[in-house]
Image (tube, rainbow, N blue to C red; front, side):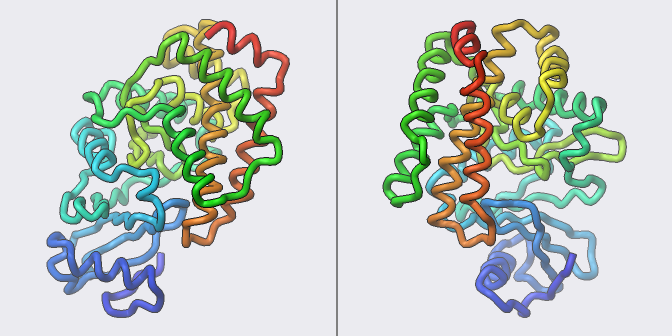
Length: 314
C-alpha cells in the first residue's frame, strides 16, 4: 500500500481525507501521520491512517458521494459499536461520527477474504458462527427489510432518472409476489449484516472471522442475511443445504425456500442500488454492469420452474 505524508494531496479525495485527519482529535492535528487508500469498497472512500513513528493504525471510511441517500450513519455507528462489544468487529472511535466518518482500529493480523476462501468448509463454518453472533446482538434501532430497501432505491432511481431495466414490469411483478408471500408468512427480524462483500469478512490465522462495515446493518429477516451471502459467494445448492443445516440444525424445505427467495430479492435491491450509484457516485466502478449482473441471477431464480413452489411453501 502506497502511504503519503499529510500535506501531499494531489486530488479531491486525498484533500478530503487530509481534512479528516486534521479534524479528528484521535489524530492530534495530523502531525506525524501518513495515509493511503484501501481498495475493495464500492460505496465509500476508504483509507488507512498510520502514525509514522508510533503504534497508531486506523481504518477510516469517508462517506461516498450520495450515500446519505441510503445509509443511516448513526444507525451504522450503533451497529459497529454493538458488534465491537461482542468481539465481532473492530473497535470503533466516535471522533467524527457526527459527520458520518467512521474510524476503526486497523486489524493487521487479519486479511480480507476472497471468494475462494469460502470453498473451504471450515471457513464457511466460521462465517456461520459470525452470523450467529451477529443475529444475537442486542436489537438495532433501525428496522429496514429488503422491501424497505427496494422501495427506497426504486424511488431514488426514478427521481434521478436512472436507467430502467428492459423487463422492469416482469421483475417487479415477481418481486411483488415474493413480497406478498413473505409478509404473509411473517418476517423473523434480527440484527442483520446485509452486506457480505468478500472484503467485509476478515480472516484470522486461526481461521476465525470478524465482520467489518456495518453501514447497511439493520433489523431484517435472518434468511435475507444468509440468502444474500449465498448469492455473493456463488454457492452450489449442495453447499447451501449444508450451510442451512449448519445454521438452523436442519434444512427444512420451507427454510430452504425462504433463503432462496431472499437471495433473489437481494439481487433486485442491489440492481436498483447500482442504478442510483451510477448517477451519484464519484468512484471509478462500472455500476451499470454490476446491476445487470445481479439481475441475471434474479431472472435465473425467478424463472426456474421451482419458483412458484418456493413462494407457496414459505
